[in-house]
Image 1 (cartoon, rainbow, N blue to C red):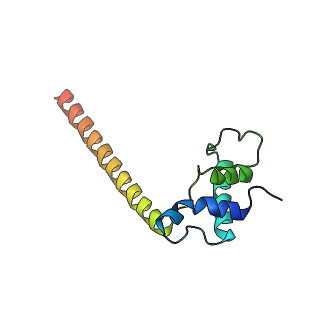
Image 2: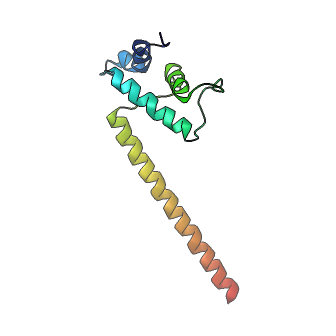
Image 3: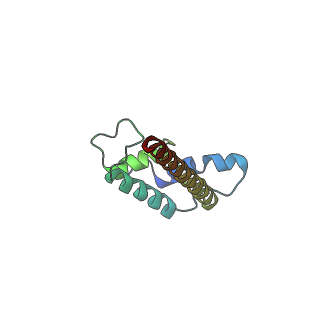
Length: 114
């Protein structure tokens, strides 16, 4: 038997929602499998594991352990949408900062030439 079981993982993931009285984040094994598989692919692609003792473990085992220890969170659809909005705002802010820096550099070069 694999430890932790999917039932234990579902309890850990849904722990916070039980206190608030909201609908659970995870309702099926499928959600657990998708989340851990996605995280395992990230680890294979080079992302650093969130746990200390990951050396020598397979990426899927690391992903399951991260989820079980609460170091990996499965987001609801609303949370994903909120993160997407935050990311878009961050990217826009960075683009504006970059443009302002380029304009400042151009203005500085123009004054040096004159």
